[in-house]
Amino acid sequence: MPGHSVLQLPVDALEEWVRARTAHYDAGFVSTDPRFGHAHVTALGPFDPDPSEAALATIADLASATAPIAVELAELAQFPNGIIHLLPEPDDRLRDLTARLVAAFPAWPPYAGEFGADVQPHLTVDAASDRVDLASTEALLADVVPVRVVLDRLQLAWWETDECRVLHEWHLGR
Image 1 (cartoon, rainbow, N blue to C red):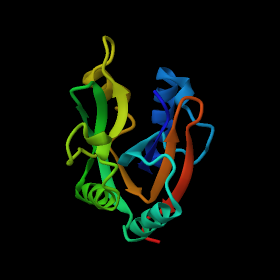
Image 2: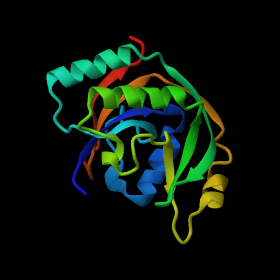
Image 3: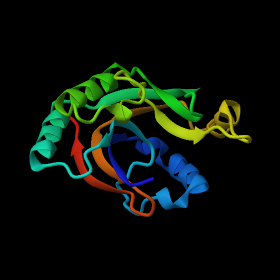
Image 4: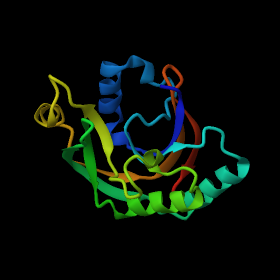
């Protein structure tokens, strides 16, 4: 898969766990950039791989107008495609941030429009397979979640094998 950029909110409290799980599946997606949020909630992706200065300024304005977002990550769910994820609660402010980003950048609908306009905010933790399911992932996470976090940064991150890195980062509410 070619590289792509994503606007994401890193979740530091789960970074070590998700980074290790990423290494388990595909070490090429383990970033050497210490800022990179392997554990994250996607705000909008894919996104423009080469945004203009005006686009970056718009993102900066949106980030500064968004107060940090407190959520709890406790409940696991699975999408039909097998992605196992944690559901942030409450998710209304995350949905609002995505809606404002989509309004500012209508050429970049969430997940390229594959799942419609209203997508479920989530933090990917695993992928279902013959040996992995909700129960096995829940057991692995038993000592990790629930976790309460404050999402306070928005990253423009580049995802590509052996090239994952943060392109830009903005603090929320500043």
